[in-house]
Amino acid sequence: MEKGNSGLVGNQMNGIRQAILTLTFLGLLLSSCSKSPVDTVFFDFSGNRGVYIVNEGNFMYGNSSLSFYDPAAKRVYNQIFQARNGVPLGDVAQSICLWNGIGFIVVNNSGKIYVIDSHTAEFKGSISGLSSPRYVHVINSEKAYVTDLYSRKITVFNPQTLQVIGSILVGNSQADFNQHSTEQMIQYKNRIFTNCWSNDNKILVINSDTDQLIDSIEVFKQPNSLILDKNNKIWVLTDGGFEGSLYGNEQPGLLKIDAETHEIERTFRFPAGNHPFNLSVNPTKDTIFFLNKHVWKMAVTDKRLPEKPFIASEHTDYYGGFYSLGIDPLNSEVYVGDAIDHRQYGIIYRYSASGKIIDQFKAGISPGDFGFKTE
Image (cartoon, rainbow, N blue to C red; front, side):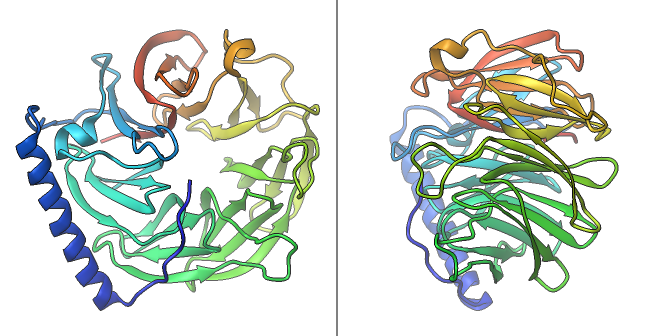
């Protein structure tokens, strides 16, 4: 899902690059619109709560897409980025981050981030020249981080000007493997915690004031997701790798870490052959959720892993169960993506906080991430 890395440039060069990229995009937009028989759709989601759904598409096919769901009307709008802007989203859309009326859509294999108006889906700018970007975390109005699977650095950019302003080197040249990749991010005070998933077993700790790597926490193999609970404990889910990997494999696990001391306080192990991922938390941060074919639910005070799924998938024998998970930050409703066979349009299931089905609808190919619009 990844391209070769290009180095960071200075602020002035980034300003020139951004201007060129914007003009190029607008040229493509006008060209595409002039040749397309479909008129541009002017969406208006302002004043509405809703859910953005990032559909990954297929690797090297360039068929990722963006959907928007209005929960009050139970209406879904698919392919909204292309419909609004006249060009496709790109190759393998990874994640979305909503902040201050804009949305950062990370398109992994295209090596870029598209920025849209979160009320209209209108293109506002982009950041290119990235290697294999994964997730965006906005620290303040002048600084945001982008993690990366391959480049072994975290890119720092200004979320208002979209200029790249620096980078944080996280590579470990002494390791047997080309570590460290970086994935999701959570923040506690001025510390950013990020999980190193690919052939790795670390949680890195970064000081967001100085943009310096200050610590690492060794966990189980391949931490794939993490959240912060109401007690300032970091929960980390690991998948254990896979059989035959040169890095090795082990039973998947779940760990609880104190965000202040960085000490591991409790560990759990899943049976061999399990593949837990997509750790999430409810709005009150007292309950965690994760996928392991089904949706599982666990209080942060529990001393053992749950024995029965909270929401069961009916299709685990055919294609492996649920694929993505999101928890509404306002009402705790549960959104679950089912990628089916990764060739047809996926299905989104919407459940109440108690696990009762409310709605279901088709999105794009391989729905992989949710962004909740709360304004």
